[in-house]
Amino acid sequence: MTRLLQTNGSRIATLKARAMLSAAGLYMPLLSPAFVASKARRAQLEFAAGLARQGRLQIVPILAGPLDLASTPLAGFRAVGESGVGGLSPMFGRRGGAATRGASRRSSSAVRRVLYAMSGPSGWDPLSLGAEQRGVREATRGSSLEIDFRPSVTLGELHDELLSERLDVLHFSGHFDERRLIMSDGGGEPRAIALDAFFNLVRGRVRVLVLSACDTASMARGARGIDYIVAMDGPVEDLAAVEFSRFFYRSLGRNLGIEAAYEDGLNGALAVGGRRIRPVLFSPDGSVRGPAAFN
Image (tube, rainbow, N blue to C red; front, side, top):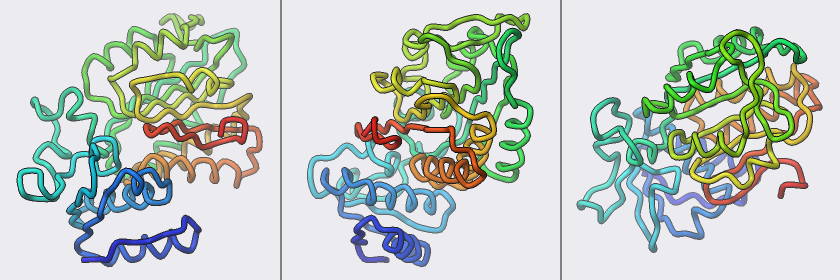
């Protein structure tokens, strides 16, 4: 068992907190709305949840006030007072059957299945989509992620996958122009998809939406019904987009959580010299990470 960790959000405090959690066998966080509202403590909870999914830590949440666990990184765990026990709920991490469908499945903090949609139709600037696919595939080799790469994706193909109710993450790499995503018509020609209608189609069907396309962040701010959205503010350098995806999915594949994976993706892109990338993360608690203009 470990003590409740107090952290001021600094890098040193974060490393100490993660070291203590990694060495502990049991973690009993005292959860309150104020605790969960802290970015540093949410990151702490995401890290602990990742350890629990690896079988390295037992988590018994204790509720110190009215709080919906489904809105926290410990969604899928059972708090003390809920059926008298703590730990993982029966539905956590299971695939198939009623327990994994609808809102119950999507309340779990586990990320497993990713649909990686790519589109580079004729008539538009060529993108390094092949290099991006190879980079992400290499970065996630041996991880728990199941990534389905779809080059030249059509809206109909995306809809088929969304109706299957098996997706955790929908990723789109391609172009955006005048409030429209540019996809393929199935024959290699471009087809413009209104982004606001696209949000409506995706709403409630994925937990995470990644839009690796220029200028998508301004429209993502008002989207509803998607836990996390990563979108781009302004133009995106092709190399930087490739590196962001590699680092982001490598961290997701090691169960570090969405917010930690976002930070790794951003830092990885900047580390290789990709300055023209400004990803913005919209979180379910309403917080926004990214350029100052969005904070």
